[in-house]
Image 1: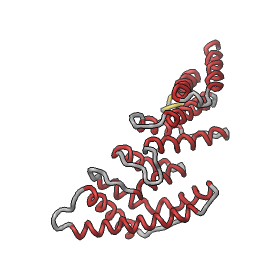
Image 2: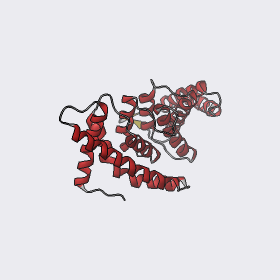
Image 3: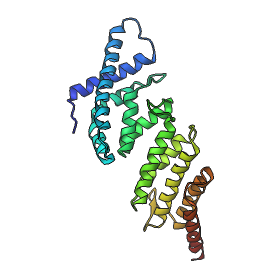
Image 4: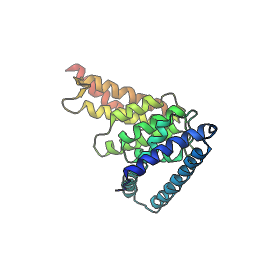
Amino acid sequence: MVRMTPARRHFQRAMAAQAAEARAAAPMAGGEAVARAAATEYELTLAELDTDLRALKVIQAIDRKIALKRELLPKYDAWVGGVIDAKAKPAPQDNVLLHMMLWALDAEDYDRALDTVTYVLDNGLAMPAPFTRTAPTVIAEISAENALGHLSQGEACNLDWLTFVEDATKDGDMLDVVRAKLHKAMGLAYGRRAESDDEKQDGAAVSKSALIEQALLWLRSALRLDGKAGVKKEIERLERLLKAQAAS
């Protein structure tokens, strides 16, 4: 586990906020020294990130890469928090924050990812090299692939997170095949819930038929967006199940 002293954490958070403000606008008179110190701290943090990225690059096993990302994430919490706290306008491009968002998504650490995803989408930040896709596309694709991986193994996925991602990215520019992948994951997750026992939503019982209808809504959307989404058989199966529910 990577550890940081409280003093270092406080300093890094303050420097991150100042660096964000300094990069968003020219420093005010008398603030040049503070701006230079903050900019230097950003360069040092980028250099540290580069070292960690090289360490990740030599690891081939995906599970080991994700395990290392989970271990490294706390080291950058203070920096990410400082950038978000600054609320600088316009928000500066911050590759440390962007990489931490990606690592949190890869690690399925959605509590940690929530603030960074919101910040990136609200401020229209671009993905760092070598990414060529938009941030909404990358966020949706990683989230969908994580969920589909669990569902393919018969495991539950985080439907609440998928719902958040869909809502947060609905107005963003995204490839249809990626949006379809997200809708497929949501449809399959609703279908899984429909076939589990004692399903409840927001503290109230939800009918099996209502959940199946939700599943069909997302699966049909996935099919409309991508004819090769691989959901036709599941749609047919759930339609038969819905008819059986109505008959009973």
